[in-house]
Length: 190
Image (cartoon, rainbow, N blue to C red):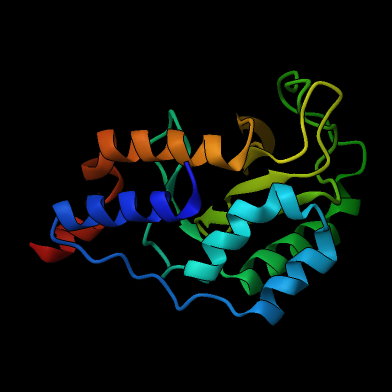
């Protein structure tokens, strides 16, 4: 699923509950170029770049994504928020030197608490939950896969093999669990 079709699907889910998805104005080329310059991989990041071209973030607590299999909605980060989350993890990484997951890590993910190719693009709860594009995969992974960071206990998990695959899975779960995901926003209407 491409970024445009994904946003249309989420807009329709919001509309079905008489809600408006509060997306920010799309990013301009200089901002998009910052991401390309920092991470490269234009082909793998193209779906995310297209998403940011459409909407450079969403309001806080306005879910745009669902981590398939979980009932938590994730806000879309703006490019500035994504780069800030990336830098925050990079700065904190040395204190987690030698970090081991509480359970064995999926071999598609690189070891450690942080990798330089992990680009956060969505989050929940002040970055206690993050969705990231993985450009530094493990031995059995592939560049461009989507992974999730969960704080307390800190762990990284595999989500999807690519952004288009993630968009499709997120749309299905959002459609099936929309009322649960949007519960707080729905209650505000009542």
